[in-house]
Image (cartoon, rainbow, N blue to C red):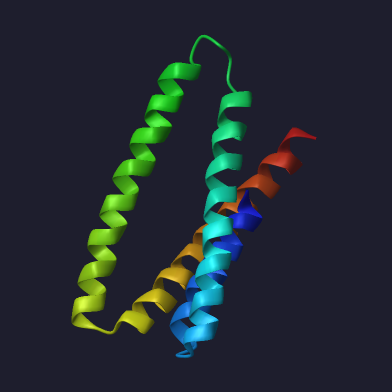
Length: 116
């Protein structure tokens, strides 16, 4: 799941960093596969890790969080693109997402060390 997030982030950076249309198209294809992989794996991981009694409530919260964060992110990056440039916004978003993926990996590594 974290790998898919990292691949998605790198594809955003590639789309913003390279002004070539062929690279941009290839980056979007990779981003699409990574995004689908992230959503499917994340959804399955959350569902399989929960007891039956709370699964519905947690999945509702999971869906709400995703739908809210996507809209908020689009608003923020739309503002950044309007006041800056679109390629710079893709690069900024990609690096921000790489930071989130690195943080998620660090938290997962810490949790795995503390449980063993």
